[in-house]
Amino acid sequence: MVGSGEIIVNDIRKIFKKGKPDEVRAVDGIGFTINKGELFGLLGPNGAGKTTLIKCISTLLIPDSGSVTVGGYDIYREPLEVRRHIGVLTGGERSLYWKLTPVENLRYFAALYGVSRKVTKERITYLLELMGLVDKSNVRVEKLSSGMKQKLSLARVLIHDPPVLLVDEPTLGLDPYFARFIRDFVKNELNKKLKKTILLTTHYMDEADELCERIAFMNRGKIEALDTPDRLKQSMPQKQVLEIKCQGTIEKDMFETIDGAAGINISHGEGFVFLRWNTDNPELILGNIIELVREKAKIYSVRVTTPTLEDVFVHLTGASLKDA
Amino acid sequence: MSLRDNRKRMLKTFFHYLRAVNAENIKEWKIELTYKPDFIRQFIEPFVYLFPYFLYGFALLGGRYSEHLRSITGISDMVAYTFIGYLFIGFLNTACWAMGFSLRKEQWFGTLETIFVAPVPRWVYVAGMALHSTCHQGLIMLIQAVVIATFFAIVLQMSGIFMALSIVLLMLLGLYGLGIIVAGLTIALKQWWVVSEALSTLIVVVTPIAYPLAVLPLVLRKMSMFLPTTYGIIGVRHFLLGEELVIGLPTIILRLFLILIVWLTFGMIVFLVMDRYGRKKGSLSIY
Image (cartoon, rainbow over all chains, first blue to last red; front, side, top):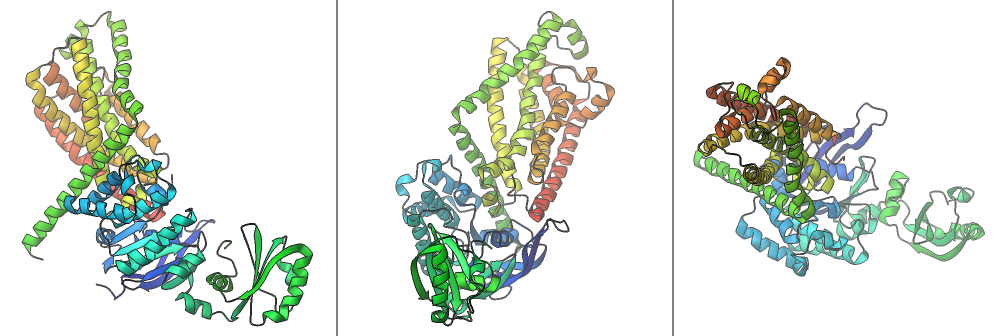
């Protein structure tokens, strides 16, 4: 056993196209420790290096330098032990054989993981019941919805009952109903009830905030901050956020002339533009800002709130989770 | 850990890998059977491709039998002679396409990374595919053999069947080395099929499928001495049709052994190097 953490990542680096003009420093000197039974989140935009890091930990990629141990096993020297110790949910619904049924898929993966035939039978029954897929157990995967496929992918990951789970973007592309199911399942069933150690990557701020005990902000291959969601939010120098929801064309430089209104974050969603300022005195800038916004857009709501993880990310990196 | 524990653990690992190989085989059968028209096509197509060989032979010889063929091989029946050689193309396809194709197919499915995080060495998947395609090809060839032998009234020396199958087994193991090389290269090379195509074409030309070794130019004849298919065809024709051996039987068996050791070893080395290269470069998830 090396160290006391379940997953120990130490100064790991992975550079693609090394020395070429289009060199990519996907993982650039990252280190952290995940404790046994912890639900740890890696939050970052697309291209931040989250998936590359998961692939390094799961032995799919060989890092250029640094060390990783999972459950005390070294990824370089004991890759088979590492793989026995982990369940990896990556690749979404494509990680299954669509021409096979759920039972056939699970039976196949159980054989790969060396689960005995008797245990395989019990685990398949248990997992299909747990996922609510009993009535679909003999239907080909290609006929299941995306949400059902993701549920089955989770069942696949659990077939050998691994103590550590690496879960990469589990709710990506799912409708709200299945996304909610997966989140609840990860938090309540896997982490709280079954005491699994979970490394979860996501670029959904709410998901990380809701599920994770600790979060590492990842951007351009580096960890920008690592702490509990509350402490990360408390670390913001400004304790309040002024948010305006509007429709129209808003440019960042419109607000340059207003004292104390620098550092605006503009994001788009559901047909609206969201303008957010981190500030200690929203009332000081509110009047001038509303006047300027009104000239270019229709305002739907104005509110003062507390910082979110998105605000922390913007504060640390200068870019939003969606755009970075 | 005591010696006994160690042995127990090794045995457990061995049976785990064996089960994984079989699971791969079963999975392939199940997926294959969902594509029914293609499955049927694979059984019909070999007959269609065999026909031009016969027609060509008939046109050149003016009939089925040839004294000239008898003078250089000891067999006068062109149909029987060609048919036995043709069966070996199926084995070649097993190695170059089915085995080599196995990992690329997983990439297309999107399942390669999922299976590669399972606690079995990566060659297990290729071995599973080899088992599947050998069973598949064996079935096709058995049907072909029964149909062609019945239709053309080919008389096979049934007493030689055991030796013929032994030769085929040795040849197959050698060919698996080739399949593992191709499978390894597919991890690193996007244009994998170029390698596969080039290798299989070269081997088909150099292997005496529709002609005896004697008609090959010297360079190609020398080259064919490094291929397991050459000895496979010579041996099987000898035991099933009574072809005169141009190389002694002990030499054939010895060379087959040497070839299978060299090819399998070389295949495993290429596979492991390419697997490491793929994990270094991150080419696993690239189509």
